[in-house]
Structure formats: structure tokens, C-alpha cells
Image (cartoon, rainbow, N blue to C red; front, side, top):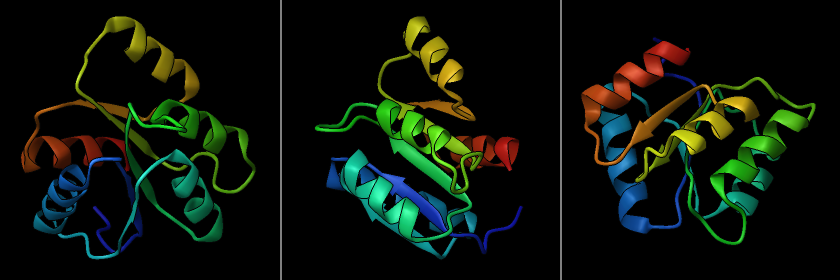
Amino acid sequence: MNTNMKVLIVDDYNTMLRIIRNLLQQIGFKDITEAADGEEALEKFNADDFGLVISDWNMEPMSGYDLLKSIRAGNKNASVPFIMITAESKTENVIKAKQAGVSNYIVKPFNAETLKGKIESVL
């Protein structure tokens, strides 16, 4: 697994950003960029070259689902691995995310092992 790539993490909850950053650092990732919502994430995504996006689903004003759709619809790096994090494992949400092109899915709460497994499966 290439831990030198840039990772974009997106969550509107600061504590969650910190947890995800810490877990990524445990796995060996160093180049981690944070965004507080989908709009900020999309700006950062378009301005840089990320190898992985990890985003929360429920955010305002732009959700992780809308972010995923925007990235997949864009030309720049549209096929970047995208992992969605959610507190709900509703089947219809999983299906919706799959149809929109999500690479993998993590249900909260999760640990470094789970995150590592999901990342390895998409890279």
C-alpha cells in the first residue's frame, strides 16, 4: 500500500476529522488534507492531486454523497478511490452510494484495522 499519496478527509465534525487523521497516521499516511464540508472538499480536490478521498455522508450544505457525485462527474481524477463513512448502514444508502461510484463504505464506529482493510481494498 502506497502511504505516500495525498489523502483528503471530509467531515463536519472536528473530533471525527482528528480521529480519522490519527488512524491514517497509525497506518502510515503523512500527507493528509482536511475539509469541513463537501464544498470545501471539492475546492481542495480540484486544486490538488489526491490519491484517496474519505468522506462523511451527512454534512451541510453539501453532503458526502453530493461530493462523490461531483467528483465522479468531473474530469479531473474522477476515478479516485472514494470511501464513504456513515453512522447508518441503511441498505438503500449503500445502494445509492454504490450507484454513484463509491469505492467502499465504513460504518461508524470503526478502528485502524477496519480503515486499513477498506483502504487496501480500494487501492
